Length: 162
Length: 139
Image 1 (cartoon, rainbow over the protein chains, first blue to last red):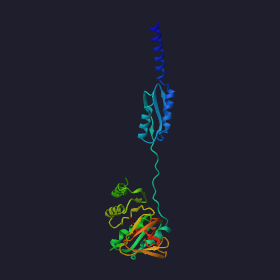
Image 2 (image 1 turned 90 degrees about the vertical axis):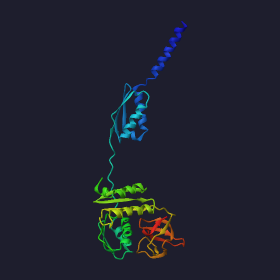
Image 3 (image 1 turned 120 degrees about the horizontal axis):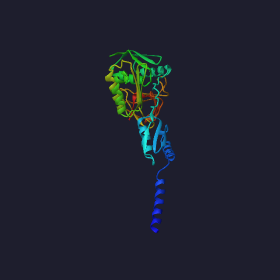
Image 4 (image 1 turned 90 degrees about the horizontal axis):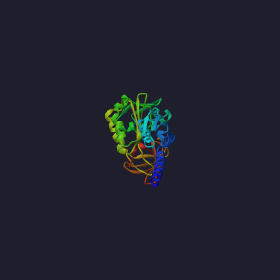
């Protein structure tokens, strides 16, 4: 019968559509991997997909990146749910070390800086500047500004402030 | 936060808040080092005012604050000596011969920065040479 034929055709096309709508796990996994690869923060994360459940593993730098991995995976068609097993490993930050000028440069700099303050004597030793003598209070800050910009290790102020 | 950073917290906070660029706060042998480029002279003055409140005689010896005003070639600077003329020298050092002078409050043009101590400047009168940066305030 004609109607039966139509039903049959509809059933075939519907079933084709239905099956084509359900992506294979391996394709879903490949899609997630592809998306992770485009985001530098997610370079350490990997996904494995079983029955539409994506399990994420690997190391990311912070919680934000972990969350982003999950959101990215959820957005992929065919993912039913996400198990986020990514671990957060903060990058190791090297301690900042101040730059200290060598004594030769400090000695030259100190000579220039104290030139206008005749009562002041400055000695340089192992990166430290030691000030002795007298200075007017009004001049103290200007001298200290000059000496601080020489990048010494330390300034020992033993000046008598008048 | 270390005890030193706590003691000078206001200084660090204001440096952060007033747009000091390349700000670096570090510690070595119980001395706090604060390095950076201030956007203007007012910011540098403000930082020194705070430092002077925390340690009025600068005697504690636990801070080295090297925050200087960022100034680029071609910009103008005012001679801020107490009252005297500013020596312009042939090279960057007080042992260098004097080639000219800039008057107190005169405006000069910055040619280049040799370092934080010595700047190559040019006066409107055409004298070019090195002057001590401590007496120049970028405009």
